[in-house]
Image (tube, rainbow, N blue to C red):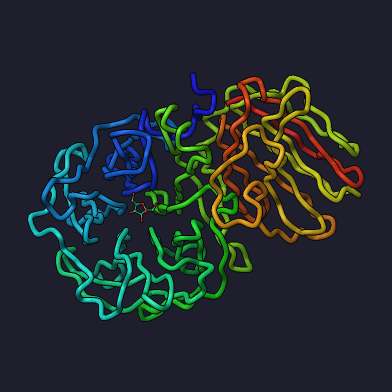
Length: 459
Ligand code: FRU
Protein backbone atom coordinates (compact mmCIF):
# COMPACT_ATOMS: atom_id res chain seq x y z
CA UNK A 1 0.00 0.00 0.00
CA UNK A 2 1.47 3.35 -1.10
CA UNK A 3 0.75 5.67 1.83
CA UNK A 4 1.54 8.67 -0.40
CA UNK A 5 -1.45 8.05 -2.66
CA UNK A 6 -4.26 10.59 -2.16
CA UNK A 7 -7.72 9.25 -1.35
CA UNK A 8 -10.01 12.15 -2.30
CA UNK A 9 -8.11 13.90 -5.08
CA UNK A 10 -8.68 12.73 -8.63
CA UNK A 11 -5.66 10.60 -9.56
CA UNK A 12 -5.08 8.19 -12.43
CA UNK A 13 -6.08 4.62 -11.47
CA UNK A 14 -2.52 3.74 -12.55
CA UNK A 15 0.16 5.29 -14.77
CA UNK A 16 0.82 8.92 -15.58
CA UNK A 17 -1.47 11.97 -15.32
CA UNK A 18 -0.70 15.57 -16.22
CA UNK A 19 -2.79 18.52 -17.45
CA UNK A 20 -6.57 18.77 -16.99
CA UNK A 21 -8.31 18.98 -20.38
CA UNK A 22 -11.72 19.56 -21.92
CA UNK A 23 -13.95 20.22 -18.91
CA UNK A 24 -17.65 20.29 -19.72
CA UNK A 25 -21.03 19.92 -18.04
CA UNK A 26 -23.12 17.53 -20.10
CA UNK A 27 -26.59 16.23 -19.22
CA UNK A 28 -26.20 16.98 -15.55
CA UNK A 29 -22.71 15.59 -15.10
CA UNK A 30 -19.26 17.12 -15.02
CA UNK A 31 -16.76 15.57 -17.40
CA UNK A 32 -13.07 16.14 -17.00
CA UNK A 33 -10.34 14.78 -19.25
CA UNK A 34 -6.64 14.74 -18.57
CA UNK A 35 -3.29 14.04 -20.19
CA UNK A 36 -2.51 10.40 -19.65
CA UNK A 37 0.13 7.82 -20.53
CA UNK A 38 -1.48 4.35 -20.27
CA UNK A 39 1.90 2.65 -20.59
CA UNK A 40 3.46 3.56 -17.27
CA UNK A 41 4.01 6.20 -14.61
CA UNK A 42 6.24 8.33 -16.83
CA UNK A 43 5.61 11.11 -19.31
CA UNK A 44 5.27 9.67 -22.85
CA UNK A 45 2.83 9.50 -25.78
CA UNK A 46 -0.16 11.34 -24.40
CA UNK A 47 -3.75 10.15 -24.56
CA UNK A 48 -6.86 11.87 -23.21
CA UNK A 49 -8.20 9.99 -20.19
CA UNK A 50 -11.79 10.67 -19.13
CA UNK A 51 -13.54 10.96 -15.76
CA UNK A 52 -17.14 11.85 -14.92
CA UNK A 53 -18.71 13.17 -11.73
CA UNK A 54 -22.17 14.21 -10.58
CA UNK A 55 -20.73 16.65 -8.01
CA UNK A 56 -17.10 17.59 -8.87
CA UNK A 57 -15.92 15.36 -6.02
CA UNK A 58 -16.74 11.71 -6.69
CA UNK A 59 -15.20 10.67 -10.00
CA UNK A 60 -15.70 7.58 -12.09
CA UNK A 61 -13.09 6.65 -14.67
CA UNK A 62 -14.40 6.11 -18.20
CA UNK A 63 -12.57 4.61 -21.20
CA UNK A 64 -9.77 6.62 -22.81
CA UNK A 65 -11.23 9.30 -25.06
CA UNK A 66 -8.38 10.09 -27.47
CA UNK A 67 -5.56 7.79 -28.57
CA UNK A 68 -2.71 8.86 -30.87
CA UNK A 69 -3.09 7.36 -34.35
CA UNK A 70 0.09 5.81 -35.77
CA UNK A 71 1.18 7.49 -38.99
CA UNK A 72 -1.18 10.46 -38.57
CA UNK A 73 -1.03 14.07 -37.44
CA UNK A 74 -1.35 13.02 -33.76
CA UNK A 75 0.98 10.02 -33.85
CA UNK A 76 3.23 11.46 -31.14
CA UNK A 77 0.47 12.54 -28.80
CA UNK A 78 -2.95 14.02 -28.27
CA UNK A 79 -1.83 17.05 -26.29
CA UNK A 80 -3.87 19.40 -24.12
CA UNK A 81 -6.97 21.25 -25.22
CA UNK A 82 -10.51 22.16 -24.41
CA UNK A 83 -14.14 21.29 -25.13
CA UNK A 84 -16.86 23.37 -26.77
CA UNK A 85 -20.40 22.52 -27.79
CA UNK A 86 -20.78 23.61 -31.44
CA UNK A 87 -24.29 23.41 -32.93
CA UNK A 88 -25.18 20.98 -30.15
CA UNK A 89 -22.19 18.71 -30.82
CA UNK A 90 -19.59 18.21 -28.06
CA UNK A 91 -16.27 18.99 -29.72
CA UNK A 92 -12.77 18.50 -28.38
CA UNK A 93 -10.14 20.93 -29.66
CA UNK A 94 -6.68 19.47 -29.02
CA UNK A 95 -3.10 19.53 -30.26
CA UNK A 96 -1.78 16.73 -32.44
CA UNK A 97 1.98 16.19 -32.33
CA UNK A 98 4.50 16.32 -34.11
CA UNK A 99 4.64 19.01 -35.60
CA UNK A 100 2.13 20.73 -33.30
CA UNK A 101 -1.22 21.26 -35.06
CA UNK A 102 -4.76 21.91 -33.81
CA UNK A 103 -7.35 19.17 -34.29
CA UNK A 104 -11.02 18.42 -33.60
CA UNK A 105 -12.87 15.36 -32.35
CA UNK A 106 -16.61 14.99 -31.85
CA UNK A 107 -18.88 12.61 -29.98
CA UNK A 108 -22.40 11.45 -30.71
CA UNK A 109 -22.81 9.08 -27.75
CA UNK A 110 -22.72 11.41 -24.76
CA UNK A 111 -18.94 11.83 -24.73
CA UNK A 112 -18.09 8.14 -24.50
CA UNK A 113 -16.41 7.64 -27.87
CA UNK A 114 -14.78 10.25 -30.08
CA UNK A 115 -14.39 10.59 -33.82
CA UNK A 116 -11.48 12.62 -35.11
CA UNK A 117 -12.58 15.14 -37.70
CA UNK A 118 -11.79 14.29 -41.37
CA UNK A 119 -10.57 17.90 -41.86
CA UNK A 120 -7.80 17.47 -39.25
CA UNK A 121 -5.52 19.20 -38.67
CA UNK A 122 -7.65 22.35 -38.80
CA UNK A 123 -4.82 24.76 -37.94
CA UNK A 124 -1.07 24.78 -38.25
CA UNK A 125 1.36 27.60 -37.54
CA UNK A 126 1.80 28.64 -41.21
CA UNK A 127 -0.74 31.49 -41.08
CA UNK A 128 1.10 33.14 -38.19
CA UNK A 129 3.76 35.57 -39.47
CA UNK A 130 5.82 35.30 -36.28
CA UNK A 131 8.59 32.80 -35.76
CA UNK A 132 7.07 30.60 -33.08
CA UNK A 133 8.73 27.92 -31.00
CA UNK A 134 5.70 25.90 -29.90
CA UNK A 135 2.10 25.93 -31.04
CA UNK A 136 -0.22 24.09 -28.73
CA UNK A 137 -2.93 23.77 -26.08
CA UNK A 138 -5.91 25.51 -27.79
CA UNK A 139 -8.42 27.27 -25.54
CA UNK A 140 -11.65 28.23 -27.34
CA UNK A 141 -14.53 30.54 -26.38
CA UNK A 142 -17.44 32.26 -28.11
CA UNK A 143 -17.92 36.04 -28.13
CA UNK A 144 -21.08 38.10 -28.59
CA UNK A 145 -20.35 38.43 -32.33
CA UNK A 146 -21.14 34.70 -32.56
CA UNK A 147 -17.58 33.76 -33.57
CA UNK A 148 -15.24 31.29 -31.93
CA UNK A 149 -11.93 32.62 -30.62
CA UNK A 150 -8.90 30.48 -29.89
CA UNK A 151 -5.86 31.19 -27.74
CA UNK A 152 -2.82 29.06 -28.57
CA UNK A 153 0.20 28.66 -26.29
CA UNK A 154 3.47 29.63 -27.91
CA UNK A 155 6.77 31.45 -27.64
CA UNK A 156 8.33 33.87 -30.10
CA UNK A 157 11.95 33.32 -30.99
CA UNK A 158 14.09 36.08 -29.53
CA UNK A 159 11.24 37.54 -27.48
CA UNK A 160 9.48 35.33 -24.94
CA UNK A 161 6.29 33.52 -23.99
CA UNK A 162 3.31 34.30 -26.22
CA UNK A 163 -0.37 33.57 -26.52
CA UNK A 164 -1.70 33.77 -30.09
CA UNK A 165 -5.27 34.74 -30.97
CA UNK A 166 -7.31 33.21 -33.82
CA UNK A 167 -10.97 33.29 -34.83
CA UNK A 168 -13.38 31.14 -36.75
CA UNK A 169 -17.08 30.83 -37.59
CA UNK A 170 -17.09 27.03 -37.83
CA UNK A 171 -14.08 25.70 -35.83
CA UNK A 172 -12.65 24.48 -39.16
CA UNK A 173 -11.31 27.63 -40.82
CA UNK A 174 -9.20 29.79 -38.54
CA UNK A 175 -7.97 33.31 -39.14
CA UNK A 176 -4.84 34.54 -37.37
CA UNK A 177 -5.41 37.84 -35.56
CA UNK A 178 -2.49 38.87 -33.30
CA UNK A 179 -0.83 37.87 -30.06
CA UNK A 180 -3.13 38.30 -27.08
CA UNK A 181 0.01 38.79 -25.03
CA UNK A 182 3.78 38.48 -25.43
CA UNK A 183 6.01 38.82 -22.41
CA UNK A 184 9.70 39.51 -22.94
CA UNK A 185 10.49 38.78 -19.28
CA UNK A 186 12.37 35.47 -19.20
CA UNK A 187 10.99 35.05 -15.68
CA UNK A 188 7.60 34.05 -17.12
CA UNK A 189 9.16 31.55 -19.50
CA UNK A 190 10.35 31.30 -23.07
CA UNK A 191 7.22 29.48 -24.15
CA UNK A 192 3.76 29.30 -22.66
CA UNK A 193 1.61 26.20 -22.27
CA UNK A 194 -2.10 25.83 -21.56
CA UNK A 195 -3.51 29.36 -22.02
CA UNK A 196 -6.94 30.16 -20.55
CA UNK A 197 -8.68 33.46 -21.29
CA UNK A 198 -11.92 34.40 -19.54
CA UNK A 199 -13.76 37.18 -17.75
CA UNK A 200 -14.36 37.20 -14.03
CA UNK A 201 -15.64 39.97 -11.75
CA UNK A 202 -15.57 42.60 -14.50
CA UNK A 203 -12.08 42.04 -15.86
CA UNK A 204 -10.41 39.63 -18.23
CA UNK A 205 -7.80 37.18 -17.08
CA UNK A 206 -5.14 35.29 -19.01
CA UNK A 207 -3.57 32.26 -17.33
CA UNK A 208 -0.57 30.48 -18.84
CA UNK A 209 2.03 28.03 -17.58
CA UNK A 210 5.58 29.07 -18.44
CA UNK A 211 8.47 26.88 -19.59
CA UNK A 212 11.18 26.28 -18.54
CA UNK A 213 10.27 28.04 -15.28
CA UNK A 214 7.41 25.62 -14.55
CA UNK A 215 5.09 28.17 -12.99
CA UNK A 216 1.43 29.12 -13.57
CA UNK A 217 1.07 32.88 -14.22
CA UNK A 218 -1.92 35.14 -14.67
CA UNK A 219 -2.57 38.67 -15.83
CA UNK A 220 -5.83 40.52 -15.19
CA UNK A 221 -6.92 43.63 -17.06
CA UNK A 222 -9.08 45.03 -19.84
CA UNK A 223 -10.14 43.47 -23.14
CA UNK A 224 -11.38 45.69 -25.94
CA UNK A 225 -11.45 45.20 -29.74
CA UNK A 226 -9.79 41.85 -29.11
CA UNK A 227 -6.80 43.49 -27.50
CA UNK A 228 -5.88 42.58 -23.94
CA UNK A 229 -4.35 45.21 -21.64
CA UNK A 230 -2.93 43.55 -18.54
CA UNK A 231 -2.88 45.59 -15.34
CA UNK A 232 -2.11 43.15 -12.54
CA UNK A 233 -0.18 39.89 -12.51
CA UNK A 234 0.89 37.10 -10.22
CA UNK A 235 0.89 33.36 -9.80
CA UNK A 236 -2.27 31.29 -9.85
CA UNK A 237 -0.69 29.00 -7.25
CA UNK A 238 2.42 29.74 -5.18
CA UNK A 239 3.13 26.23 -3.89
CA UNK A 240 5.66 25.20 -6.52
CA UNK A 241 3.79 22.00 -7.44
CA UNK A 242 0.92 23.12 -9.68
CA UNK A 243 1.08 23.60 -13.43
CA UNK A 244 -1.28 23.66 -16.44
CA UNK A 245 -4.57 25.27 -15.46
CA UNK A 246 -7.98 24.61 -16.93
CA UNK A 247 -10.76 27.15 -16.39
CA UNK A 248 -14.37 26.44 -17.17
CA UNK A 249 -17.63 28.35 -16.66
CA UNK A 250 -20.27 25.98 -15.39
CA UNK A 251 -24.03 26.27 -15.83
CA UNK A 252 -24.31 28.11 -12.51
CA UNK A 253 -22.01 30.80 -13.97
CA UNK A 254 -19.09 29.92 -11.74
CA UNK A 255 -15.49 30.19 -12.90
CA UNK A 256 -14.13 26.75 -12.02
CA UNK A 257 -10.45 25.91 -12.04
CA UNK A 258 -8.42 22.72 -12.12
CA UNK A 259 -4.67 22.24 -12.21
CA UNK A 260 -2.16 19.43 -12.37
CA UNK A 261 -0.30 18.78 -9.10
CA UNK A 262 2.88 16.95 -10.02
CA UNK A 263 4.97 14.47 -8.10
CA UNK A 264 8.06 15.68 -6.26
CA UNK A 265 9.76 12.37 -5.65
CA UNK A 266 12.47 10.59 -7.61
CA UNK A 267 11.52 8.87 -10.88
CA UNK A 268 12.37 5.38 -9.64
CA UNK A 269 10.00 5.79 -6.68
CA UNK A 270 7.27 7.03 -9.02
CA UNK A 271 7.76 4.04 -11.32
CA UNK A 272 7.61 1.71 -8.35
CA UNK A 273 4.42 3.35 -7.08
CA UNK A 274 2.92 2.84 -10.54
CA UNK A 275 0.97 6.10 -10.66
CA UNK A 276 1.87 9.77 -10.94
CA UNK A 277 0.02 13.07 -10.68
CA UNK A 278 -3.09 14.41 -8.96
CA UNK A 279 -5.73 16.92 -9.95
CA UNK A 280 -6.13 19.90 -7.62
CA UNK A 281 -9.48 20.09 -5.86
CA UNK A 282 -11.99 22.06 -7.93
CA UNK A 283 -11.62 25.78 -7.16
CA UNK A 284 -13.71 28.82 -7.92
CA UNK A 285 -11.85 31.92 -9.08
CA UNK A 286 -12.52 35.56 -8.23
CA UNK A 287 -10.75 38.91 -8.43
CA UNK A 288 -9.77 40.95 -5.41
CA UNK A 289 -10.27 44.70 -5.50
CA UNK A 290 -6.61 45.24 -6.36
CA UNK A 291 -7.00 43.02 -9.42
CA UNK A 292 -5.16 40.02 -7.98
CA UNK A 293 -6.68 36.64 -8.75
CA UNK A 294 -7.98 34.55 -5.88
CA UNK A 295 -9.24 30.99 -5.54
CA UNK A 296 -11.39 29.12 -3.04
CA UNK A 297 -12.25 25.45 -2.84
CA UNK A 298 -15.57 24.85 -4.61
CA UNK A 299 -18.35 24.49 -1.99
CA UNK A 300 -18.95 20.92 -3.17
CA UNK A 301 -15.71 19.96 -1.41
CA UNK A 302 -17.62 20.15 1.92
CA UNK A 303 -19.34 16.90 0.93
CA UNK A 304 -16.06 15.15 1.80
CA UNK A 305 -16.43 15.93 5.51
CA UNK A 306 -16.93 12.75 7.50
CA UNK A 307 -16.51 13.85 11.07
CA UNK A 308 -15.58 17.05 12.78
CA UNK A 309 -12.90 16.24 15.33
CA UNK A 310 -12.23 19.72 16.71
CA UNK A 311 -14.11 22.95 17.01
CA UNK A 312 -12.57 25.36 19.44
CA UNK A 313 -10.44 28.44 19.99
CA UNK A 314 -7.26 28.77 22.01
CA UNK A 315 -4.18 30.80 22.81
CA UNK A 316 -1.09 29.58 20.99
CA UNK A 317 1.84 30.04 23.34
CA UNK A 318 5.28 30.61 21.90
CA UNK A 319 6.59 27.23 20.75
CA UNK A 320 4.79 24.30 19.31
CA UNK A 321 2.10 21.83 20.42
CA UNK A 322 0.43 18.85 18.83
CA UNK A 323 -3.37 18.76 18.91
CA UNK A 324 -4.80 15.77 20.75
CA UNK A 325 -7.06 13.49 18.69
CA UNK A 326 -6.78 15.55 15.55
CA UNK A 327 -4.16 13.76 13.50
CA UNK A 328 -4.66 12.24 10.10
CA UNK A 329 -3.49 12.05 6.53
CA UNK A 330 -6.91 12.90 5.15
CA UNK A 331 -8.00 16.14 6.78
CA UNK A 332 -9.55 19.56 6.28
CA UNK A 333 -8.53 22.34 8.67
CA UNK A 334 -9.87 25.87 9.05
CA UNK A 335 -7.94 28.11 11.35
CA UNK A 336 -8.27 31.84 12.01
CA UNK A 337 -5.35 33.46 13.82
CA UNK A 338 -5.30 36.86 15.47
CA UNK A 339 -1.73 38.03 15.11
CA UNK A 340 -0.57 38.95 18.68
CA UNK A 341 3.19 39.26 19.21
CA UNK A 342 4.23 36.23 17.17
CA UNK A 343 6.48 36.89 14.19
CA UNK A 344 5.71 33.57 12.55
CA UNK A 345 2.72 31.42 13.36
CA UNK A 346 0.51 28.75 11.88
CA UNK A 347 -0.25 25.07 11.69
CA UNK A 348 1.94 21.99 11.37
CA UNK A 349 0.74 18.93 9.48
CA UNK A 350 2.08 15.50 8.59
CA UNK A 351 4.24 15.56 11.70
CA UNK A 352 5.93 12.70 13.54
CA UNK A 353 4.93 12.27 17.21
CA UNK A 354 8.58 12.69 18.25
CA UNK A 355 8.91 15.92 16.27
CA UNK A 356 11.41 14.47 13.81
CA UNK A 357 9.41 15.57 10.78
CA UNK A 358 6.70 18.08 9.96
CA UNK A 359 5.46 20.60 7.42
CA UNK A 360 4.74 24.14 8.60
CA UNK A 361 2.00 26.28 7.06
CA UNK A 362 1.69 29.83 8.30
CA UNK A 363 2.32 33.55 8.07
CA UNK A 364 5.58 35.43 8.33
CA UNK A 365 4.82 38.90 9.67
CA UNK A 366 8.10 40.50 8.60
CA UNK A 367 8.27 38.96 5.17
CA UNK A 368 4.53 39.53 4.70
CA UNK A 369 3.92 36.17 3.17
CA UNK A 370 1.93 33.03 3.73
CA UNK A 371 4.17 29.99 3.41
CA UNK A 372 4.46 26.23 3.18
CA UNK A 373 7.74 25.22 4.76
CA UNK A 374 8.74 21.62 4.12
CA UNK A 375 12.37 21.95 5.15
CA UNK A 376 11.68 19.53 7.99
CA UNK A 377 9.38 17.26 5.97
CA UNK A 378 10.34 13.58 6.02
CA UNK A 379 11.59 12.77 2.56
CA UNK A 380 13.15 15.68 0.78
CA UNK A 381 11.41 16.59 -2.42
CA UNK A 382 13.43 16.50 -5.59
CA UNK A 383 11.41 18.51 -8.03
CA UNK A 384 10.62 22.15 -7.40
CA UNK A 385 11.96 24.04 -10.34
CA UNK A 386 13.27 27.53 -10.22
CA UNK A 387 12.34 28.52 -6.73
CA UNK A 388 14.93 30.20 -4.53
CA UNK A 389 14.44 27.40 -1.98
CA UNK A 390 12.77 24.24 -3.28
CA UNK A 391 11.44 23.41 0.19
CA UNK A 392 10.02 26.81 1.14
CA UNK A 393 7.23 28.34 -0.91
CA UNK A 394 5.43 31.58 -0.16
CA UNK A 395 2.74 33.88 -1.52
CA UNK A 396 2.85 37.64 -0.89
CA UNK A 397 0.05 38.64 1.46
CA UNK A 398 -0.20 42.06 3.04
CA UNK A 399 -2.32 41.62 6.15
CA UNK A 400 -3.38 44.81 7.92
CA UNK A 401 -2.14 45.26 11.51
CA UNK A 402 -5.16 43.69 13.23
CA UNK A 403 -6.26 41.51 10.36
CA UNK A 404 -6.68 37.82 11.09
CA UNK A 405 -4.92 35.15 9.04
CA UNK A 406 -7.41 32.71 7.57
CA UNK A 407 -6.02 29.32 6.63
CA UNK A 408 -8.04 26.64 4.90
CA UNK A 409 -5.95 23.53 4.48
CA UNK A 410 -6.53 20.18 2.79
CA UNK A 411 -4.20 17.30 3.56
CA UNK A 412 -4.57 14.19 1.41
CA UNK A 413 -1.57 11.94 2.10
CA UNK A 414 1.18 13.45 -0.06
CA UNK A 415 -0.97 16.34 -1.36
CA UNK A 416 -1.35 19.54 0.67
CA UNK A 417 -3.48 22.44 -0.62
CA UNK A 418 -3.52 25.70 1.32
CA UNK A 419 -6.00 28.55 0.76
CA UNK A 420 -5.42 31.84 2.58
CA UNK A 421 -6.80 35.39 2.68
CA UNK A 422 -7.55 36.97 -0.68
CA UNK A 423 -7.64 33.53 -2.24
CA UNK A 424 -3.88 33.01 -2.26
CA UNK A 425 -3.21 29.32 -2.87
CA UNK A 426 -0.23 27.05 -2.36
CA UNK A 427 -0.32 23.44 -3.57
CA UNK A 428 2.47 21.26 -2.28
CA UNK A 429 3.66 17.67 -2.04
CA UNK A 430 4.96 16.10 1.15
CA UNK A 431 6.25 12.53 1.34
CA UNK A 432 6.38 11.46 4.96
CA UNK A 433 8.79 8.74 6.08
CA UNK A 434 5.92 6.51 7.13
CA UNK A 435 2.13 6.38 7.43
CA UNK A 436 2.32 7.23 11.15
CA UNK A 437 3.52 10.82 10.56
CA UNK A 438 0.08 12.39 10.76
CA UNK A 439 0.27 14.77 13.74
CA UNK A 440 -1.32 18.19 13.48
CA UNK A 441 -0.21 21.10 15.65
CA UNK A 442 -0.08 24.84 16.17
CA UNK A 443 3.05 26.93 16.43
CA UNK A 444 4.05 30.50 17.23
CA UNK A 445 7.54 31.97 17.06
CA UNK A 446 8.70 35.24 18.59
CA UNK A 447 5.64 35.60 20.83
CA UNK A 448 2.16 34.18 21.23
CA UNK A 449 -0.94 34.50 19.11
CA UNK A 450 -4.55 33.43 19.28
CA UNK A 451 -6.38 30.81 17.22
CA UNK A 452 -9.87 32.35 17.30
CA UNK A 453 -11.30 29.49 15.36
CA UNK A 454 -9.94 26.03 14.94
CA UNK A 455 -11.91 23.42 13.03
CA UNK A 456 -10.68 20.03 11.86
CA UNK A 457 -12.59 17.44 9.87
CA UNK A 458 -11.66 13.94 8.86
CA UNK A 459 -12.34 13.52 5.17
C1 FRU B 1 2.04 21.02 -20.16
C2 FRU B 1 2.14 20.26 -21.44
C3 FRU B 1 1.29 20.87 -22.52
C4 FRU B 1 1.05 19.74 -23.45
C5 FRU B 1 0.93 18.58 -22.49
C6 FRU B 1 1.51 17.31 -22.99
O1 FRU B 1 2.22 20.25 -19.03
O2 FRU B 1 3.48 20.14 -21.86
O3 FRU B 1 1.87 21.99 -23.14
O4 FRU B 1 -0.11 19.90 -24.20
O5 FRU B 1 1.60 18.95 -21.32
O6 FRU B 1 1.18 16.26 -22.12
